Image 1 (cartoon, one colour):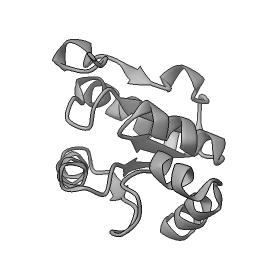
Image 2 (tube, rainbow, N blue to C red):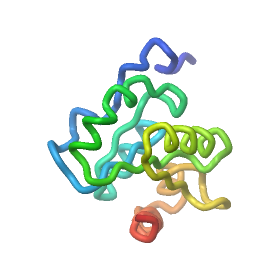
Image 3 (cartoon, helix red, strand yellow):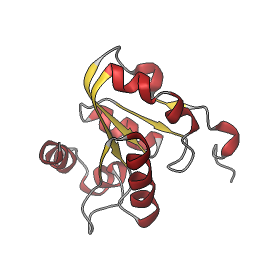
Length: 128
């Protein structure tokens, strides 16, 4: 019943080890399942352990800016996700996107609902 979440693991960035040295685009997601889904869709991604625990992300902003031409926050389309993305966007200067309202709340839920990656790829191609 206990998740691997909280302030004590705020130094973790999931997916970090599989990132290339340099790239055009990096999607910063809100969960490991979203990072896995966007990676399978053909995009590089990583995530803090929570939308609200960004200590590790703050410590690597300069690194990510140097390694990737664009860093985009891709959090959930619910109120906490949008608020966290807006605040983080303001703090670090990165753009943010989210799935449209009426869609599932995150990339993993969209793929689960549709059973394929088509809608996610279509959304990302249009949004980016």
